[in-house]
Structures are given as structure tokens and as C-alpha cells.
Length: 333
Image 1 (cartoon, rainbow, N blue to C red):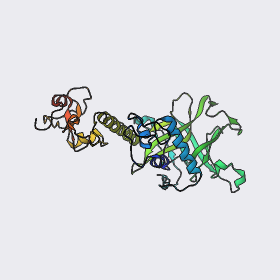
Image 2: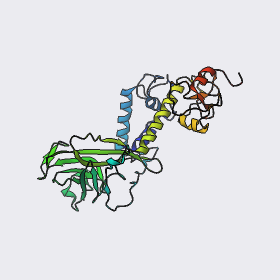
Image 3: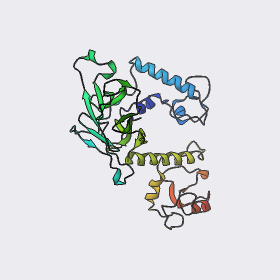
């Protein structure tokens, strides 16, 4: 789910050991065992030997948080809703556009007066509030966010302070306000419909992650998955996957503690070198993928085997076959 409140990143910073990531062999902070060198990176960041001790550390953090004890890092301010215009809007599903992502959305979720159309079915939204706190449960202090279909069926969330759907589901109700099994199909005018909890992951203009949440009514036969990625979020996710894969693959080969391990996207280096092989000075076809011998590969100027680091300064673009031919030779050989 999204981290609009910055909680998980803040939590990771607090759980991280002040001495930095363990390299293996050091003591676990929760038991007499040592931290294995191949432990999960988060476990090594926290100096715990495995999942059990990681859970113990997390419970200790939760108790500290509940006790209101002072923390070394202040909790971050919640991310502001990217949607600043409260004017009601219609968010459409443009299936005819041919776009890979045809769904309109904006902000943390629909607000009072908005309409969301998905697969030809429209859902309207209301924010129901009460001035009497005794009339609402504690989990709905800001009232209820109600998604309504023209049949009278409605899906209810506890609302946020802006009237968008929160994290707590109040229930799925029919036209007579009778609670139904959550997200079970119902029939209206010869069509089977179902409530779907739509989650769309997206990025703000400055690259912060957030989630659009909406209860939408859709045809029952449609597979409208709850977890959707906007084009911007997908590009960032694919970039992170490349960074993680490249860093992990080369980190395993760097055995010297002093060697540099830098996290970066190989595409950044390929673009920097203008898609020209730095070993043969010939163009590299960006459409070719590994293991095509003329595809792009990341070459280390000073090979890792010779003590070179995995960094932007020590890497360059090379044809895969040129990289193989170079092997572990150092510059000048």
C-alpha cells in the first residue's frame, strides 16, 4: 500500500542500527546469534539474525511508540493530497483510446460530488458527517465516505479529514440499507454488478508515492484488479527493478570491504554514453536484449576482479560480446 504518511520509511530509519549495515559475523541485537552475511538486507540494516528477531525488534518499536517515549527522529508530516481543487469532477474510463492505462483519477480518492465511470458503470460519492460524536464510531471521526450506484446499493468507508475514503471499510449495503457480504455480486437491469476496491499507485510531481483509493461499481465479469499502477509509477518501479538487479548482481562479485557499491540505473550510463560502445566505438542497438551478443551491457573500466568498484565513474556502455572479450583486463592491457 502507499506510504502517504511517510510511516514505513521513518520506521525503517528508526529500526536501523547506528553502526550501519552489518557485513556478517557481528552480534544480533536480540539474541546471542550472529548476523549471517547472506541475511536479508533489512535484517542486516537492523543487526538481527533472522525473521524471529526482526519481529521481536518490531514489537519493541511498537511498544516504544505506544508509550509516547521520545524518538531520535521526529515523525514526518503526512503527504498533502495532490488534488488541490475541490470542484467535483467526473473520472472516466476511456477504453476506446487504446492507451495501456485508460483510467482517469486524481489525488487520494474521489470526494463529495465526484463521479467515477468504469466500464460504462457510474458511481457517485458523498461525504456524510455528524456534529454529534456519539453518532459515529471511533474509527469514523471524520464521518463516512459513501460510494453509491443508481440501484441504491452503496459501499461505505470511514472518511479521511478531506472526505476521501480512508483505510477502514464500514460495509457493503443494498438499496434497503441491509448489510451484504462485502463485494458480492448483485443484479440490476439484467446485469451482474460488483463493488471493487480500486487502488491506483502513482507519483506526485516531485516523485513521492501515493495511492488513489475508490470503491467503484463494475460489471461482475470484468477483472478490475485492486492494484493498478499509473504509467509514471510503472516506469519508476521498472527503474528500481533494474537498479536492484544490477546492484545485487555486481555486489556479489565485490569482495573487498573498501570497494564502492553505488546504486544506479544501467540505463543512466547507457544514455550518458549516447548508446556508443566504449570498447569498439560502434553504436549499440537499444532494442536488442541480453543474451544478444550485440545488446547493451554494463562494463567496469577497472574490473571488479581487479578491485574496481560498482559506481557511475567506473562503468561504461559496451556490447555484450565486447565486454566478454575484454574479460578482467585492466585499462592499458
